[in-house]
Length: 199
Image (tube, rainbow, N blue to C red):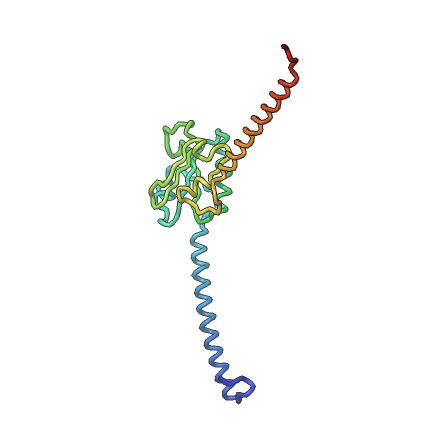
């Protein structure tokens, strides 16, 4: 290949034509690749919010959901404060995981005889089948609501958490118990030292 400085006008035109054709092909390939990526992203990010549903939409929203979509539905009662807390947490998770369908339903609108003591209840579906269920406060992640970890454990979401956040809480509780025990020992030793010696 001759350097451009040594080419005549005809050779320069040929080189420019070759260069333009190669560029056009590369740009078109890149454009197609980016378009595919964008379409895939659009397909995956179609939800992004916690939506209300009821008995009449249940089959459409849950059972007939696309096969590649996880569906998380919270059965709740507005009069139960922890249910409202779970709704808030699920709203945050819905924004974080827009490829997952997050739904909530007043329990009486879906299951007539479901008892309030089982609330909050979270059901996880994929391909129309139940993949996980969390019934009651403890199974929904406890009062600290570690829902993200619980949902990742059943494969509903792909989290970036590396370990169960509940572990940190347990470690803090253990440390706190050890500190209390150590303080009690110190207090006991001080009170023993202050007792009069009777012989």
